[in-house]
Image (cartoon, rainbow, N blue to C red; front, side, top):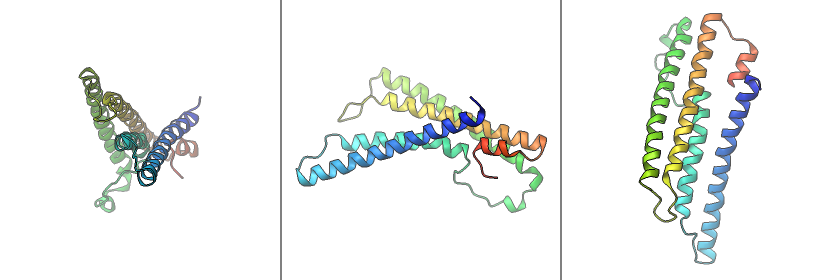
Length: 175
């Protein structure tokens, strides 16, 4: 599988899981409201289901936001930053973000194991919380790896000049 195919597969997989969880949240909420209003019988644990699906949706989209560098940023100093140093700045920022994401993911991994060991569950449906925490950890590792990929992309761009069209399409950016 080529780099382009792998990157598209990762992007589609994470995006599809985020979209599916959003759709399921809408279905659960719709059915809960309709059954509450028409039958006076709300769905037991619908709030917990929506909370878990919200966590899944957010953390499935999180690596994509990091990878495509679409997170919120403040560009107060961009006009004063020399253009020849932009790649170096991006390398440093992406390395710091990747290290942070991987550190947080490793900590979450430990917390997930502890959560399963202590048998922590949600209040009503008694869903094990450790599995959701493992998912959060895995998406943190994926986000860290994709952010490291960004640092490599900018390193290549800095060392070898402007990137080619194939490199731009692999990273998921427009030319």
